[in-house]
Length: 254
Length: 245
Image (cartoon, rainbow over all chains, first blue to last red; front, top):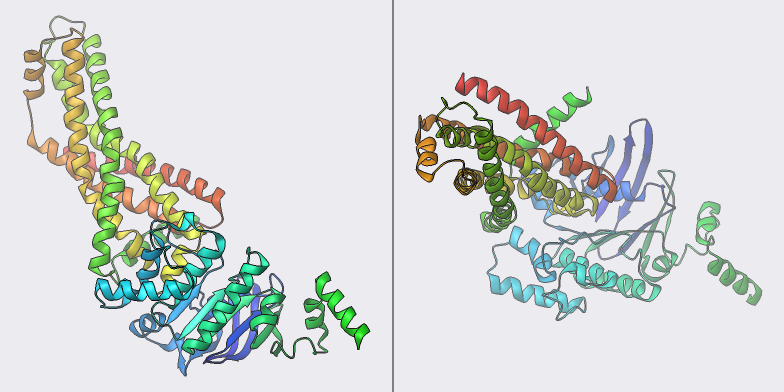
């Protein structure tokens, strides 16, 4: 579980996060949604410890990250998996080496143990047999699955995903969304995912935090987001023509 | 103010580079890869340039000796001194700032743009140690490259001198043996090691702290080449002043 209390972050005079309070639960896919520029990525980077913040606290299972010693922070980071928007795979390594990397850095496993774990994880993300490919030889969807495999190979307690299905076709995006949800459920990970894709919201949004201008404007789940009266949220949700038509048809039927 | 900030950030980067070392098993692979990319991969171009520049120095010297009072072995002597003292350590380093420096800046810069450095940081890895330290270790072998440049420069001078008919082989060899001072070689290698440190760290700094996209990677490579060259030239002046005068 991750508890965020009064999180504030500025860049110069510009306040990007203006006091966010929320909790992300274990074994659930927690989504941060909002328009571009609403502070989603900054929020995620604060959660990851990539950005320092001025006010507030982030507690991972009760441990406040900013109060940990360097060694404790390093240990904590070994428990974090991250899927970046552009996958961020290491170009100079094969897919197998990319996935094996966290094991080489943080475990004392033998080469054969590491290979077995990599085989298992690659099979889990349906990439069996892609071991020797370079990231540049893999499609966008494959790269995302490799990034997920790399993020979960060291059995993390927390999984962060920054718009994992951006740039993917709708079918592949759903595959990635479902994979993230299955893994979250299977390993009881606390997953936090950034998205502005309403399909993801409908598929896997067990908890949703809606950000607007650096503030939490709404909080709920995939079941409540379509029923809310919050104008800011409905404005965002029904901004696509497809959703507008679906709502119109629903209203006509009922 | 901006320059002071950059200078401070550069020294902090060097300090950070030695902290939180990466596992030796992983570091060994990185060092070997960087030796291959930065040292072995440079030998070809260094050999080619050194041989021909050595030839040019030799021809130019021979053509400028008009007086019959000046001995012919001066061609070999002047070629050796030029190559040993300046061409191999200093000007080869400026060429390497273009070749190796641009490679370092663009590879680290691309990693920055594609969030690969963020990925390392999220995993709790000291990305500066992981990325810059192996390059620093690999470039400790840079004197080996400069030795080749020295040898081939003098050899190129000999080939141009003998086959161009400016002097005989014996006279050229006499020239390269005349007034030889071992300290000149030590001086050349002190400079080489200093420049190796600059070649590893200045381009890394420009790649690591760059902001923006693909276009900025190109700009950072150019800026890193300019600053590495300028720093090499300035330090060359002070090292020469300190060690030779």
